[in-house]
Image (cartoon, rainbow, N blue to C red; front, side):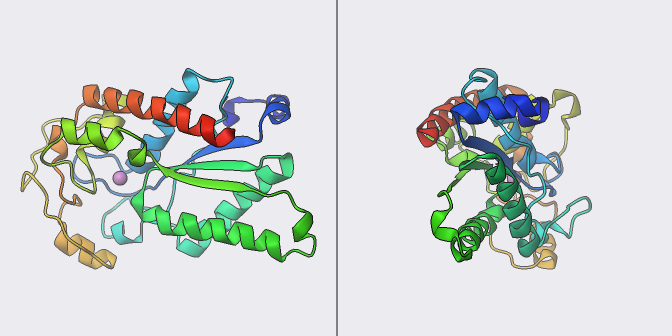
Length: 250
Ligand code: NI
């Protein structure tokens, strides 16, 4: 089931048999010369939709939380960021809205490494707010889980097999492939990468990022990306997601 495409009665019926929801969470940030700005939101959404399409009775996919923490990409036009405190506040409100209806188990399915620290902080905030209430002891416990799509079993192995050189760590060949499989009409073909494999290294603020990684990539050669690889990655990740979510839902 997909929350946006459900009626309130559908959700009421879902809650009679499950208290679990999956929420894709991503970012809106530059992804190099041939990657979409929405890449980190698109990847977890597309994988979740693929998993849902073959097990619609056993999973509920919420709306994608599509803008995250991307301050370090603000040197590139189009990037939108939340400050960490805003993102935490928004995640608390999304969660508490759903708790009010009866949801208790939240599987946040993430597409952006830069979100991880803030998602963990949001989980702590959610738990703390509930504990500090005078009736905190009587509130139902919540299970909050964070899973990055690239950490699902076997996914990293397939990335290494497809891209032994030039997979990289930002604007990776694999994530761009996933978006090309999802939106083939929007592919950017024949974009020259210079250098072919982008430099690797650290960064702090947005100006440093732009200075060190001129076209936005880190360590990657996304000219290797293609829709066929993306389809393989989506199918593998969706299968792993189905089984991991089933274990979480209990
Ligand atoms: Ni990304």
